[in-house]
Image 1: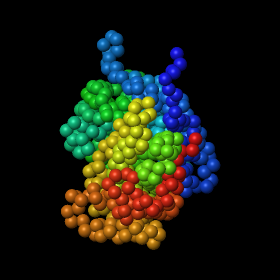
Image 2: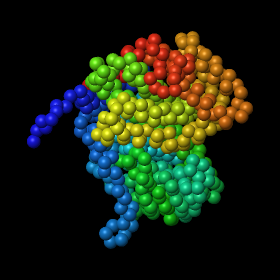
Image 3: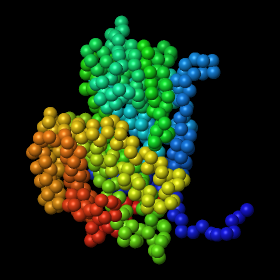
Image 4: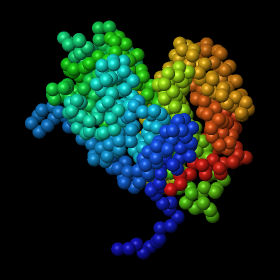
Length: 547
């Protein structure tokens, strides 16, 4: 029966049926800036194709379905045999399959691969963030496996394949594989050197039997895992396949799946090893050194993932305010709401610009640029610290822009808010990142030189940036008792780096607003407190997703 009591009016249409890539000016400009001109047409075509899929009603429905139907653990079959399998909703497999086919695990195998992948990861994660975990782990496993050329030759073609081959079978019989990671244990957390999992050498050279537990094992239905365990010479990295070459299941007892705040579509597990077969990767006692490149790559993905969440939250907020009317006009035209939206847009653009700059550094480092490699050593943990921490307040404020409409599940905003804290925790929380920056400053002076060269490229273009660089140099000159103020130092480093990039590459209204607020101190303690004299309308218009 038709409703007769009222007519629905003044509701914003769904943000659907648009190109998520092309509608993101900061992202599309960064791709054009960092890719070789000869690659641009092909890259833009691929990214727009992915962007249209990401903006489609079908893909958005997959995201809702994957989260409304979280994975389920099956430890035994009907006859009592241990199987340790995790069942996922079909929508999860559709999302994961599209991510693999879009090259989100194939950065290492093509020119400009890291920039292209970073842009695609930022676009596709806006549909649904949980399935990004196995994509990220698979991508990041490649540099770790290269510590053993024989293993890399065997596994890298499978890891970088653009074919999603679902199901547990021997890796040699699959067209593509996914990887997970197992480092964290109950007693140590981020202190992996406290791990108690033991590796006992077997008769075959390079093979071991592992016994112990992993408190957090990412993506337990993957085909293989990089794990840390204590061998005779100390903490060592191992490749643990789920299915052995003869088709039998490796010992991989999934005790339970974690009941998490967000990231509901993705399975994170507690796993027990009991004589589990593993192949050593790198030398005994060099486990942290072997796996550190994987950790660095996943930390960059935390930056990209947070930039993706922020972009989607801001896009939804600006879109809503474009259509919603209150107090005699559109919300987007109200000076106070415009200030809020502009403030949020600055955070989003700064995060995206920094993420793509770091991806470009990966491409250049792969070509032998040692300056870029040194920059990554310092800039990745600094960016991971700051960008991931900004994600939660940005998402919460964006939700508030939708009012009560944003607080209901159908809007998608609660899912973004639950997801927002994740990247700040995974791959080392805030203190771990801050301490890693200190370690680089103290042990690798070339990383500081590379960082200062990067921020110094914008010197003289904005007096507030110049002042912030000067203040940062004063702080860096005095490292006495620095640990207690490490967060403050790393925050300033990240902001100066973002400011330098925006001054060089963003429109003047964006750079001006960022430098005035984040570097010049003309800013309050909440979003929406930018100086009123700035060109805020242009900042908001730049952030508006055009359907």
